[in-house]
Image (cartoon, rainbow, N blue to C red):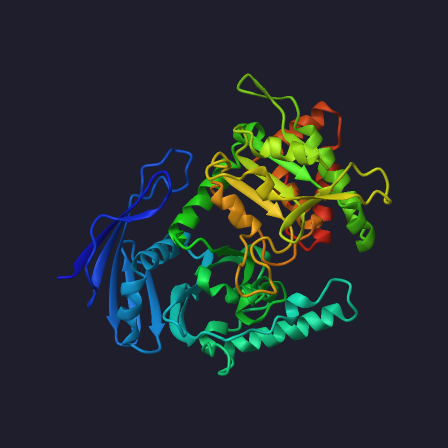
Amino acid sequence: MFEKIQYLIDKNTFKLKPKNTLTKITESFMVSVMFPSCSESFCMRDLKEVELNIKQMESEIRINNNDGGEILIAIEKPEDWYRYLNKNLSHFIGLITTVFIAKGKEDFLWIQQSNCKKIWILNVVWENSNWKGLLVECLRPIDLNRIFWEIMPGERGEKRNKELAANELFNFLKDKKGLGLPEDFFKRLDSSISREQKRFLTIKVHPDELWFLLFPIDYFCKYRYSGFSLYKEVEWILTPEKSFIQNFLERSLLQEELQNVEEFLKHSIIVLNTYPKEQTWKKDNRWEKGTKLVTEILSLFQNVIINDNNLSLRWYLNPTEDKIFEELFNRDTKYFFANFHLENNKWRISKCKMKSRKDISTVDIELKNHILKRGSLSHNRLMRIFHCHSIIIPDSTVIETPSITQLLLDAGALRVEGSIMEENYLDHLCSLLNICCNPKGLQQILLWKCYEKNINYSELMENVNKFLESYNLKTIVYKN
């Protein structure tokens, strides 16, 4: 008879909580994960319980769930399994529960401590209609080449040097003198895979193993390095207590909330900082065209009548520092979308509104000066911040001072989306266009407002899709 462990998922925080546990696991066992009773609007409302049967078969772990799904995880050394499992049980249960409910739309990579010299690396991927995984224990590298992160935009040979540096880091993953990961981690995938078939990759990294972030995974995905060609987006979990299942449920809930037009218009703040100096340096006419397009669309979401409420979206072009923090601390703000230039772990904003290309004044914002006390941002459910290296300083293997992302999380924000790689203003504009023109969200309001203002809706949407295509992004489906 298998031992059975029971877990509950908290209905408010989505944290995984054990109802009972085993002192030490030494044989096959069963797990029951109970889901909360959520509101009808929540996409997980039909889930009540996931039951898992976990059994070791020599050098392979076989995991079955109550719906007939199966995960096969290969282990290089069979004796490693229980040593790994007993130290990481709750997070492992969170991972495999997420695997089953993600239904093949998301793959997973987990970097976890083993001891002072070694780490665990576990991946679980959807392959040929089956879930497959691999658990390996590797030596922690003493140092990684950081040339990739030190190459500055605009440098001579920037593109070629970036590629060479990225190749070196990619090979380090496989090299026996590096991490020595097996070839199974890097299966070649069909290069003709469509954007619609691409999946998410979620990577959880222990805070003491942040050196792993020096591998430019986003770059590997963008430029189709072996198996990474499958992914359209990478998400990192760096909060040690946050499990894969908590992250997945938070993201799923927020995706549904953002499709609620009334809630979005009531509780969202959108900030655009244009940085004319950088715009001039880039010499990219999409900056001005994109700004004009996005501001035209944002201006339409004013005086929208929903359920007898007159709602207007709050948005700002090059706002002052005081206005940014007035809205940030506003208890009515739930969703905060903004772009900032980042220098020395400080936000840098345009000092005044752009009047010409010569207007290059900027000002630094030191977040600490605004007293981000614990709980002061607890009303913020989602903060999507576009700027470079908001999570770590890429030329360091440790975070010597809290990153901006961590400061916002410590102040109580539920979810903060930042970036390890470089992001620019165009990334922000594309994200806003997808939000404002989403057929499951604001698109119908946009259509009504175009008719009301005598604006050619089809022409507007064609311009939106042309802009997204110029950035090699998926276009938006729309109907008149």
